[in-house]
Length: 113
Length: 111
Image 1 (cartoon, rainbow over the protein chains, first blue to last red):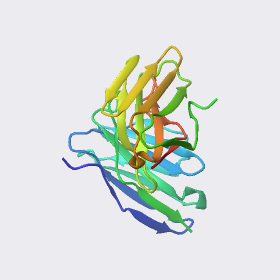
Image 2 (cartoon, one colour; image 1 turned 90 degrees about the vertical axis):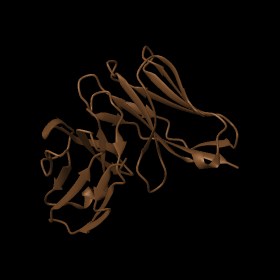
Image 3 (cartoon, chains in turn orange, red; image 1 turned 90 degrees about the horizontal axis):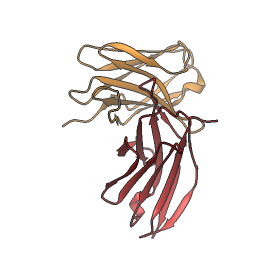
Image 4 (cartoon, one colour; image 1 turned 60 degrees about the vertical axis):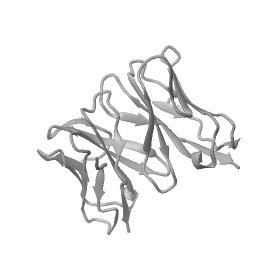
């Protein structure tokens, strides 16, 4: 059974640009959550999607957005990149999101220069 | 007060010893609790989930939950050098589905 797949693994962008990250969940999983991990702030919740709807959102600015497709694959977009957006972006998939175990992908390492 | 608190460590134990990792949380209505292991440069890997008060054992790992004290712990028996990693405690709140993570405890097991 394939795990959670994130693409790309590494990305270098310039300030002001935008970026799109992709996440394919485990087959049958309908919930996808996104997290940002930095050395200073740890793992912070961005948002969760279930059945193509954003079900929950963390405390991040509107520059961070996402969507989920009918096959449960999810994308995350960050517009007008800032140096502080440099981080490891992780997605986690779970069956329903509610009280079920979540499994992480390998992450996308974003560097903003 | 942080939502999920862990001792940042580092925690150092000799090979073969028991490593004890602790976590407290602030949301009294939390229902689901998880322990993840994260090796340097890698993504978090789920070790244990626990939903009810008491102990849950899986191989060398035992998770303990005390909802009254808002406390969850992870014991690693017969610690191995390969257990050296950062251990993240995660809690799902009652109201939302988002997992809140502690800052993690870095464990080093010395041969």
